[in-house]
Image (tube, rainbow, N blue to C red):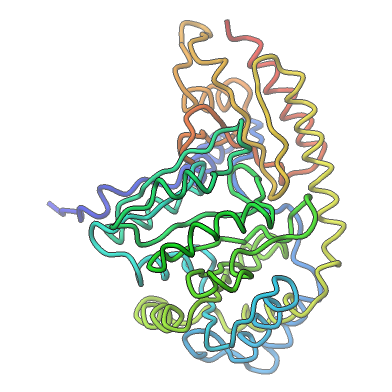
Length: 397
């Protein structure tokens, strides 16, 4: 009998991928399921990026590349960091990977060992916890509820830091909440971080451009914590390049070299064609994204307005990404056809089976009172989904 590793046995399946799989299975049975579970833009990759990929193939950029990526890609990333984030990274401080998820894994595996503590504000992206567990680290969860707009305070951060703290991971704009830390809020966190020079922070900024609050703020822009911050970004979300698989980091040189060493033994560099397409995306003026961002903002308003019509649902106003993370705890304890909703998991399954709308339980993101709704879908689809959700929830008593 094959014995799987303990590492695998303790790893949870991605809740977003699992719910997407369940919705596909129901669709295969002929049911009309609306999936709002995956964090994937419903836009196509811009034509000028696809043309850059075609040019790369025609010019035979089809061989192995340096492990951290082509030099001209890393130069384009460095220029982007300076232009958009006011951060100075040299190309040697940049590593391109097969998606931001691998970028994060590289950093965690480079820094975290057995028993090291990793601070993770909740709600958090589902993979943070599992990546830390693979590195044999100990996740330390710092809870931030809807009343605080799902953002932790400097005091909470200070109280979570111990002699074993090695790393902190957070995202802004946040998946799953859409919350955005302002420059002032990040400065306040930086004041805590700089007091603990051994603490490294992964700032996950993959949703940077999908931001309705004004200018995006990066933690590494503050010079007094620059050497403690790893900035993670990529092209999947803003540039609708999820299938191209390219994420990247800007980091202190020692960490960048460590990530390149680890990557060299796992995947080596991301696809050569993707790298050339990414250069085109990064060199473009981000203002070309304004129509997409406007569409997401309009969809956000639609979903929030529809949720406000449902008695018992509590929402905040997310300032970025393309998610709403409502508190649905008012429905816990209610029943339908003899089945009682005990938690967010039950409610998500109830909505899948009764409303045929796939969402993701907040428990997967560290908040048992919420569910995540992705509004990366057309307004027509969202209207129908919200109509179904309202009708199903009204059946609970």
